[in-house]
Amino acid sequence: MAQPVDAATRKRVLKVIFISLLLDLISFTFILPLFPKLLEFYRNVEAPLDASAPPSKTILSSILGYLNAYKAAFARPIDSRYDIVLLGGALGSLFSLLQAIASPVIGHLSDRYGRRTALLASMAGNILSVLLWVVAVDFRTFLASRIVGGLSEGNVQLATAIATDISDTSSRGSTMALIGACFSIAFTFGPALGAWLSTIATVAANPFATAAAVSLFLIVTETIYLYFSLPETLPSLTRTPAANGHDDKSVKPTPKTAPVQRTNSHFLLNFVHLTFLLFFSGMEFSLPFMTYDLFGYSSSKNGRLLGYVGLVASLLQGGVTRRLPPLLSVRIGVSACLVAFIILMRASTVSGLYLAATCLAATSATVVTGLNALSSFEANEGERGGKLGILRSWGQLGRGLGPVLFTSVYWWAGREAAYGMGSLGIAFVGLLVFFGVKTPPGSVKVRSKAPAVGEKKEL
Figure (cartoon, rainbow, N blue to C red):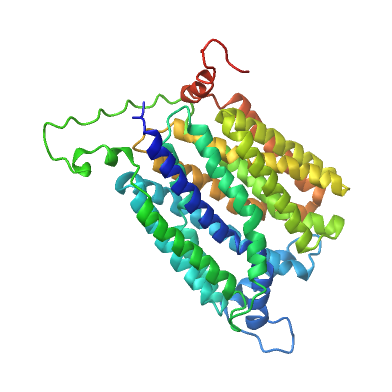
């Protein structure tokens, strides 16, 4: 059993995590709605569509050549308006795959040198990444920005590890839900703010410099705030007498915690994370295509749809998810995802679309949060950073491969085949979480402590 953290310290650290992660994710989401126009700007400068223009030999023109060859392999013709979307998807996959490589390294470093040290090092990489975006007057510099960002972004997994350090079994689920709420709030407001900032031109050579500069300001502010406000939370460091200024042999060291008796293998949890995000991220990426083809949705209407998903997800995380045991949370989310896939496979009305979006909001509010909590229950305190990093790595691998796999089926065989495949994939994930994953004993205590007298438990 982990040594308890006093309530005042836990409250203070949770406040720091919440504020810093909110700043980080709002900054991160600025760029999401800008990708089409941003990449279109670089294409017009470095690889114009005008046939009379002399061919350019830039990184961007080479990448577009490979993407066009890939597009030509499909049986169904793909309109040229999807070129930018394909490029955006490729960059998104690159970012996720780099995260898959970096996450375990960041996690293991945090287990060895401390959460605070690892987080501040990650923030230094984030600052460099956004600074490159500010000065990115060519695609090569912008690509370097995304590479540096993919290799250094460790805020989410480290915030999760910190939350685990300061939480006992009775508060683990609600703490993880707080981190999930940061995602939902940021994705509700961040993209809209980024889109508005992109309309303010300050540098002719980089029309998106204003959004990038505000993003940089938020990241620098977050780093300063973390430096002065975040204490170290890694138990092996915080309970060392010398670390607290005591070098007296009369000081009795705090007993080490007993090893965790694992209920689920980390391989199973990692595989569930990979498989779930493989299909879920593919569906997320293909949704704008579907809404355009079926309903003629513009970027603004797609923005409202995603804003609705974020708003509902944040309400669910604040009012429902934090009260649920993690395994139940995962099961509810996977079930909602399966319903969403089935609806989208046949949807022909806007009301059907928003019904599916409501199910997707429930999924966003539950599954990843629950899997993080489950993984933390299965890890000893000295390995949590590494285990959570590996869990994130498997998930990012799925997020990197999902869009390519899903859109390939979408263009080859059509919407019904793509979402039918997704339904089967999520049904398989459902079998794993309902019949393969078990409830860790630590998470059961959340419910056993709920009644005041201890005679009854809610079902």
